[in-house]
Amino acid sequence: MTESTSQHTPFEPRLVAFLCHYCAFAAADMAGSMRLQYPPNVRNIRLPCTGKLDAGHILRAFEEGADGVMIAGCEEGSCHFLKGNLVAKSRVNWVKTLLAKVGLEPERLHMYNLSSAMGPRWAAIVQEHVERVRALGPSPARAPRPAKSEATK
Amino acid sequence: MIVGEQKPFEQIVKLIERYRRVLVAGCGTCVSVCFAGGEKEAGILASMLRLEAQKNGRPLEVLEQTVKRQCDMEFLEEMTTKVGQVDAVLSIACGCGIQFMAERFQDKIILPGLNTKFIGVTLEQGEWAERCAMCGDCILDRTGGVCPVARCAKRLHNGPCGGSSGGKCEVGKDRDCGWALIVQRLQKLGELERYAEIIPPRNWTTSRDGGQRKVVREDLKEQGRIEPR
Image (cartoon, rainbow over all chains, first blue to last red; front, side, top):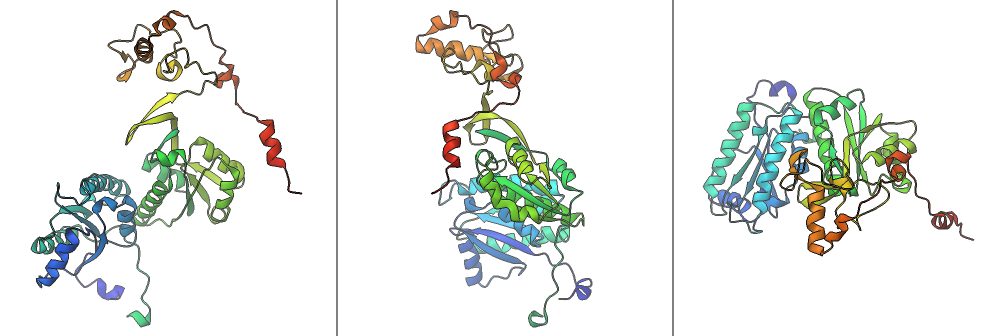
C-alpha cells in the first residue's frame, strides 16, 4: 500500500497481541480450527505466561507502529503459574499510565482473560479491540513507515 | 542501597527538549534494585521519550545503555562510544553516578533523570524506607540497633520529644517515632538501662558538617598501582 492510496482507504488498525501459551494462544488456535472469521489486523506473540510480559514489550510495540495492543491471559484464578495473569493485570494498568504520560490514549491497551476452550471469545475480543482502536484512529506516535522496496511491493 | 526515584516524565522531557540525540544511561546496581534507574527502566524511559517525540513530531533519537555501576570509572569506559554519538546524556543513576559521568565525559552535557532519595531498605516489593543518614560515627550499639539520626525527624540523641504520640512521629502519622522504636527494642533486649545513659553532644564533622568526605585505604591504593613486571 502506498501513502497516496492509504489516504483514500479506511483506517485499518495494526494490533499486536501478547498471548499466554496456556489459554489465549490455544483459544486462538481453536478459533482457527473452527474456521471462525475475525479481523486480520492482529499479530500474535506467544508468551509462556502473561506474567512474562514486560512494560518495555508493550511500549516497543507502540514505538514500532502498533495502533493498539491487547494482552490475553488466563481467567483470574486459573493461571498455570498461579498469579502471572494478576501480575500482568497490575502491569497493564501501570503501562496505561505511562501511555497517558506520553500522550497516547490508554484505551489503546487492553487486557482480556479467557480460557483455552474459548475460541469464539478470542474472535470476539479481537473484533472488539479492533473496533475500539479504529474509533480512536491511528496512533499519534506511529513512526513513519519506511518506503517499501520494489521487491516487497 | 541508595534509593532513587525517576523525575516526573514531563520534567525529563523539558530537560532534553533542546537536544536531538540523547543517551539514556542506566546504572545496574542500587537504582536497579529499587526499579528506578536500571536496564529495564532505561529501556522503558527511552521508549517513552521516543513515543512522546514521535507523537509531537519532534526529531529525537534516543540511545540507551546500562553499565554495572556509574560510580566506577572502568564501567563508565564502556559508554565512551555511545556518549560520543549524542548531544546529551540523561543519567538515571544516583547523584554519584551522574557526577562521575560528568567527570569522565568533560565535554558532554550530563542531565539528571533521577532524584536520589536516601540510603534505605526494601520493606516489601515496591516500598523502600530510609535507615541510614551517613553520619560517619555509628552509635547503633547504644540505641538498640535503631538509628536516631535517620529515624528521628529531629535527629535527637536523647529522645523522644513531646511530639511522639502512640509510637508515631508528629511529622507524619505514617511514620514511626524513632525513639519509641529504640525504647521498645531496648526493652525486648533487656537493656533498658541503656536508655538512662545520656548520649553527649556529637562531633558532627564526621557528617555533612565536615564538608565533602573521603575514605582512603593506602594499602589498596598501593596495590592498585602495581604494574606487572
